Image (cartoon, rainbow, N blue to C red; front, side, top):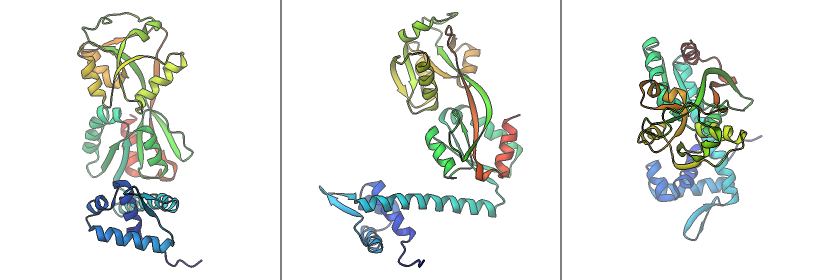
Length: 297
């Protein structure tokens, strides 16, 4: 097969920028080139494929059917190219850098102390981490965009290996001035009578809660607020009006100090496992091995 008249990465990157930024001028700012350079690159890319990739409809650019196919390939290839460059860089550095994703609650409440401990123990190793939702983490692991992840739900993908890390439980908590403070056991049928502030629907915490409620035939909690931070949830609960479900590792210290109260629900507990997840094709990473050994002690 002859590899002639192939597109280059610059053309793909230009198409991706135009699509994701919403226009030529926006793409030019992102790529730090002139608008004429953007237009020229798009024209060269279209010449390569021999068909229009973009069309103007109602004054706005949109992809043609061919453009959508090229965009999907371009996105996949560019992401893989970035991953490859990082992998080669890691090889040249003796794999001293670890790319890690974590869910928001883990990143907010468990990871900071772990990173400090790890840095003290292994000063020559470096961990670059990002917080993300579970589904994005699974995609990143499967595509080898990251080396490892700490998650609140086990990814379901044949290329991803999971190891048990910690036991966890979602606790129902309230503030000391809430009417439920001091309650021994809340009857299950009174769950629906409370006012809740909860994490947002895409969060692992919310997915665990919704699944548990569905298992007992309950789906209509009185949800007053949904927010994207566990700390914000706690701040709102501490004002006394709301209750919430949060992981034990998030609220345990505040329960012990009396800032929050753990409300036990009769016949209802939400047990979970926190997981370590890795791509099966990248299990020989010394930084990952060292980090896992430390956190599983």
